[in-house]
Image (cartoon, rainbow, N blue to C red; front, side, top):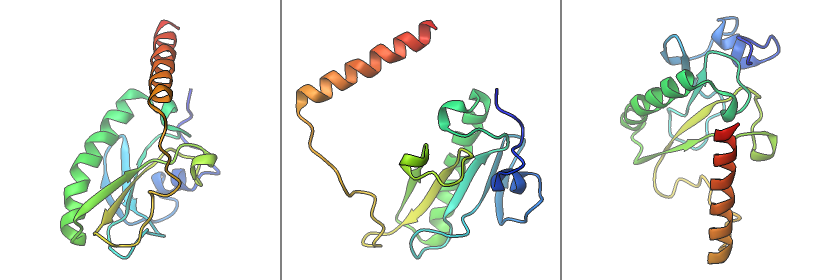
Length: 149
């Protein structure tokens, strides 16, 4: 069970209005604000967070996930328009190994233009088809196991 706030979490301090942040959208479940260390040169890099303290995506209660998805859908075109972006990256770093620095689940909306120099396509590999089939089957089996529990 997630707690409402973590007193050591900077994002929880934003939610509680203990620290000012450039808010772009807020409702009962979601807070969206500009990243204070944005990627790239375009304005508008936005973070979307649940207003309850969840560490990783799998911890987030369904009602919060729904509201986060709706916020992302609303924000993406607005950010593109304001920033002049040609596209948006939606990124969620889940766990320290994936680059999550603030341990409060959050989603990045990063405005992009062709050739902007932001790199998220490095260290890619070309798996064999059999590996893909085996991995897909293992994930499906795990989903079935989790559904039964």
